[in-house]
Amino acid sequence: MRIALISLLLLLAGCHEDLAAAIGSQDLRLAVYRPGYPIKNKTVAANSLQALELKNWAAQNDAGWTPSYIDYVPSYVVNGRKFSLNISETKAVLMLDSHQYEKEISSDSFNWLKQRVFGVTDNPLVK
Image 1 (cartoon, rainbow, N blue to C red):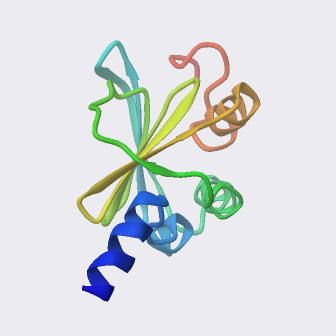
Image 2 (tube, rainbow, N blue to C red):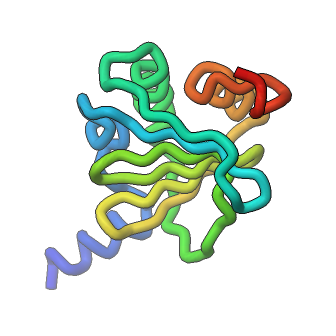
């Protein structure tokens, strides 16, 4: 009973496995979608600057994730072996170990991720 209560409290608090640890040292698949269709796909190496930037962002944004039960249209998506991260202008949605979490993000954070991780400026077809 105690373990079940503790597990429930952790779930309600939005606790989850560390995203930076889930990213680990693996190649990542990046995709940019416009409205719901992929227009740009690429794989980046685990030791690439883009993967390291994402890992740093994940470490700095580990808190504030809450359970989510809503499906979101893909926007800027990162896929790894154990996770999927969908980033939009106002929210990051993480699927990790069969659980979904969401976190509000600032427009500065969104623009930083768009440029530093996805290599996208105003036009995703450029580059």
